[in-house]
Image 1 (cartoon, helix red, strand yellow):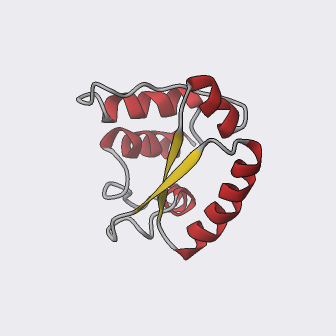
Image 2 (cartoon, rainbow, N blue to C red):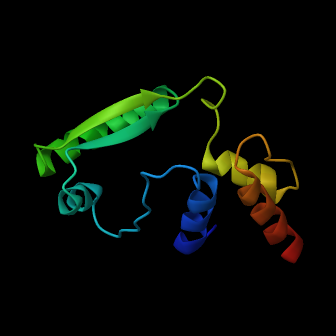
Length: 117
C-alpha cells in the first residue's frame, strides 16, 4: 500500500529519538542481505501460533542457505498479538480508526489515501 520510501519515512519519524537505527531497503533474500551487512542474527517477532508455523519453516530454509546465521524470536505483547497489516489495512479502507495500532503519521497517511479516492 505504501512505497518503500514512504515506509522508511514512517520508520524514521517514529524512531527519530533512537540513535542506533538505520533504514536500508533490500530486494534480495534476507539471508543474503544479512551476510552483506555482516549480521550474525535475525530478530523477528511472533504474534500467534500461525506466525510460529511460518517462521519455523523459514528458519529451516534460512539455515540451509546460511547455517551461520541465527534467528532470535521475540513474543509480541498481548496488546498487539492480534494486529496484522492486512487487518489494519481493512479497517482503514472502510474508514475505521487505526490510531491504536499504528504511529500517528501512518494513521494520517491511511486517512489521506482513503479521502483521495
